[in-house]
Image 1 (tube, rainbow, N blue to C red):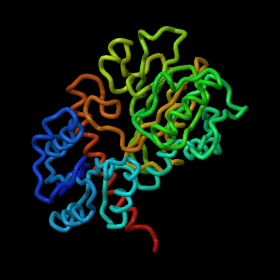
Image 2 (tube, helix red, strand yellow):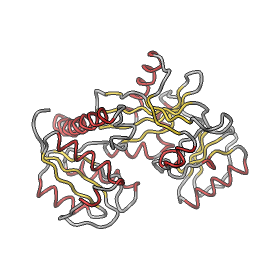
Image 3 (spheres, one colour):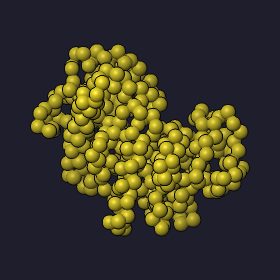
Length: 347
């Protein structure tokens, strides 16, 4: 893509903002590393870039669109009013405005957020998923007899492993009831309970709309976790650096996967990506048994794009910087492609 574009980088803010905003202080912090990395990549590509962080005012976004007239929006806003459930609403607003944007559209965000619906869709299409059940807040916390222990008990619609801890791993009905009640009360949402799949934790990043690119398979390894302990991607396992060091947790490129198995995993992830109507970019989380049988756990549209995260990382920092630029370029292209598809669609 040689043409230089006007790109609006869209962020979310934890408090109300104004049209004239200076985020230089925020962009210097670790919490804003994704936004900082993406802005750096867009700048390196030569695009004219402005940014806007929104909290609870879509009219602010409308004003910015009218004033800046961007060719494409690089959408990094994954919550509205501090609620991640509303990320699909932002995508819907952009779709209704007819503005091309990067990342996943509203339908893919909705399907992937509901872990039960996504598993039902994929199970129907003969993709392996763990045996699971939904326990609404209006129902008693009783385990369906078809669910066999051990079981993972999780919030139905949370992201980033929120609500997942070692206590999510239950081995009897008393533990099951306690954890279900805890999630119902603490997280104020329904529960998904699924049979625990013993095996390797694999992450597969995919980019594109129709023609897909699959990135090298990544893995969360548990070096210091005792063999008889469950290996779970808990919230602490993902985000607590001291916890990760203590238990030898590390994200790395998956080792020991032969070419045939790798192709099978990549093919399955492409099917998952399309079946869940993901576009732009996404990450598929899998568990693989010792015999090579692969199970879908969840899909994550719009994963974190910071240079040191699984989606962007390609090894050393130099290659990570290269990946960052390529991802920014490809994401802008997919946003433009979404607009082209709309124009070509028969009325």
